[in-house]
Image (tube, rainbow, N blue to C red; front, side, top):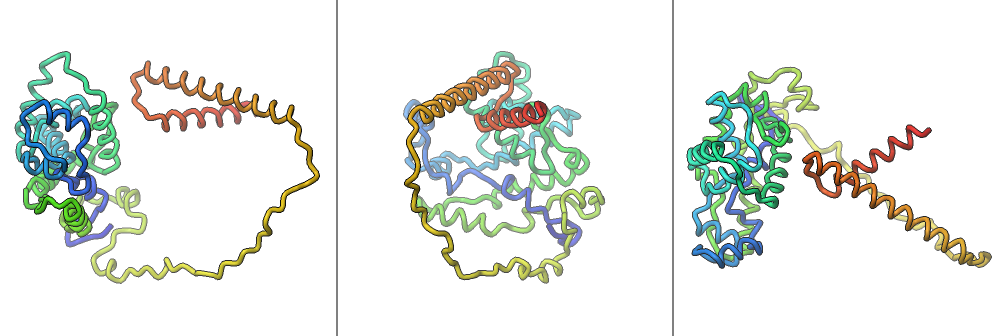
Length: 313
């Protein structure tokens, strides 16, 4: 984090808002897209990056969402948008400078009922929402993505930010159809981010509470950053010595088949009980319209198990 003139460098924003399509890293064409290409009259390619470029796609998804929320805020609509609305109103948009069309799409579909739900796309949008909510300019409100209090207090700056990222000169553009060169060009572009792309909030808008929460080491100026060295990160290497003796095994034990069998039976019972608990928990969460991954279910289960153990003591 650093102060540059009267602005503050905030690296959190850059990776999320700068991510664009065409994407030189993600070049594979998914089976679902191949199926669509086979059914319709679309330009075909075995390379997703070239396919997007030839189709006229030039978009930063997070910036389009930010622009839509900004325009809604100008209309005193602070309720945010849902994943389903993103699927139907924003995903058909091919370029960021066509955001007005996304507004028209959203206005029209909010007057309709019974919109088709694509579970796979909605899950992807939900993951996007979670990622965006980790920045300072977005928040989650139930299933919706909304502008944060910080963004609402700085709408003029948010608009300047959108204009900067909607400028087609800020995009990575493929200049070859060689997959290897595409990847190198992509990482070269994003490995050297423009400092201006990371400006987030004017220094005059910083409060002591905001600095305390977001800048553990304080706000540096440019000279401070130049002088800051990595000497405190030196690693002290030592010679590796093998001190453990190899395991030689034991010869004085007896195999107890009955005990092994009983132990196996107990493990199977615990495994079955574990699966039943996870399945029951998943059903209850689904009935409450929760969306989650299997990992999230397991984490919830283990938290409950730990609490039950503490309670039983």
